Length: 420
Ligand code: GLU
Image (cartoon, rainbow, N blue to C red):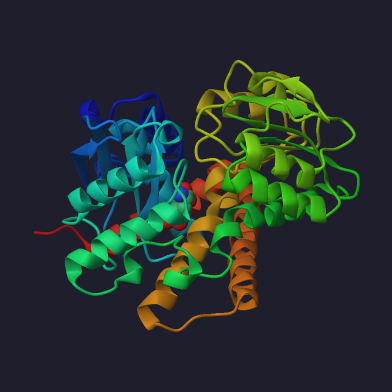
């Protein structure tokens, strides 16, 4: 198969993971490319009028992985390193994630190569609206439903909803999830990914016979996932001893006061410089001695260079694709470390996105209690299915989660058949 269009470290990694699982599941060679290759991709040039009067053109993408089970679903990333290959890898992981937790979606992802922190609010709005306009032919409540990802938030989703709705001539809240609650967003969506991570950490601790009280955690990434996971874990009695973001990290073995940190982050936009902690680098954070390590930033952070040096007992993957297959091979030799794989660990986000979409389609909204209750039920089911398969077949948690997700998509494709 020619990977040319998508060839990139992340897409190769997603294919490598897939091939290992496909070998194990004995998926026939003929079915593999069909499962792997994204169905559609759209690249768009996004011209934006900048505040200084100049016009800058940004590259944007939307990739849809498979259309077998329903519309496609996945976030939109604003980050300087976005490429179509990275986006394609993220669509594959979205597909296996949605199938693992039983959502009627294929995976999708989108992104614009830009640095949102270097844009003014007006520039960000114009970029979002023009990018949305360019995506109109491929998105919609029955086609493809975007959501937040790295570098985007509720406000960006509100602009997407508004731009799409203006084109349609009526409000279409179901075109996007992770919106403000007032515009048809779901209660609990903003917190869903981080709370899901914390829930699964507590389940992993049960499995490992560990106590939350006094356990320690290090978190790479202090965005929507890392910051909410930190608060939820602190509520369980876990001490957060190290946190990093794109600019650097902080470490305090006695625990970081999250309220004070949030005040510092709101005024400086970074954890760096927080007075009650020592500075550390992102690389040091990953190998800091702790009970729970949470990569909640970007792909390919735990690699063959640092996997042997990790000093944690649980890795809870808040990010998508944080661990490379080479690192997985090293971790396979370290059974003392329990991995909650990304497609399970961070699935709380897309689960509540699904709830948001269902509520929008019905114009019937649920209480936060209902949302959380249904979220934890789906997470519990996926956790137990993954754990049971991993034990029964003596395979890693990642292998088990991927095989459950891939199997459902493969079976669905087989049932639908090949047209014509
Ligand atoms: N970007 C998130 C993810 O990777 C959420 C996607 C969604 O809610 O559709 O899972």
